[in-house]
Length: 241
DNA sequence: AATGCGGTCAACCGCGAATAA
DNA sequence: TTTATTCGCGGTTGACCGCAT
Image 1 (cartoon, rainbow, N blue to C red):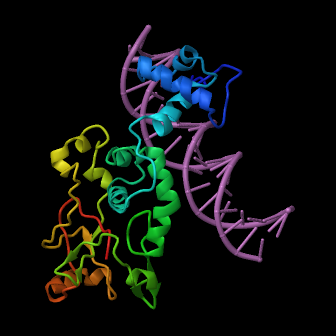
Image 2 (image 1 turned 180 degrees about the horizontal axis):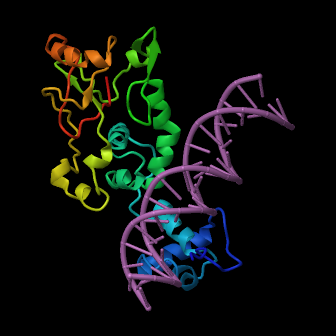
Image 3 (image 1 turned 135 degrees about the vertical axis):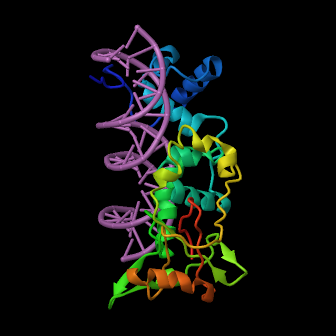
């Protein structure tokens, strides 16, 4: 049913030449974005519309920032990824001047490794742990996690929060609705503060003696352990230790 | 100098969603 | 409502580059 985006035979592929870029820029400056299917012919380009769109969005758009990611941008990407998963366009939408492709590439080439090195599983943002003699212990790296914007309380106290909820519940239809509501997410200055409150059943604690049947007991011990904290809000996620 | 390797990033591909007819 | 078309997204690929050997 679905046709290839360009059934034309003689289409250029691969890297764009300066001349092609200029043609695309000139055309869009004159006619605006959109109607990508018809654009190549109108602009005199031997490219498929899809390729033109990608080139414009990821490279030629005048509002692109380009250059290295700042530290706060990195932190924001990590936090947003924890919330949204691989929804790069949504993440990029919160980073002015950045494209989804750029964010995705940066994640895959830098941030993934960075998290792994810190003992954090980049897929679920949980600490990487190892089972050892029926004990769950943190990896050595996890124990020396340093300052990727770690939420801390009163200096030395660190937060360990794990969220069992499927994020889809939290950001349901966020692509089209919820996330556009700045107020509900505290954006653009993304409010990801992890509130401290009474534990609930969906939260887990990561620590050395964690067993399922002990969870209740563990929770009760929280107030005695200054290093363990919970957040019960539906947007809880574990990011950092 | 030549080669191999790993990292980066621009571009492509395939698919589902959205929209038009 | 169904079918055709376009758009946008995320995953993947491959060219290029720098570094080590």
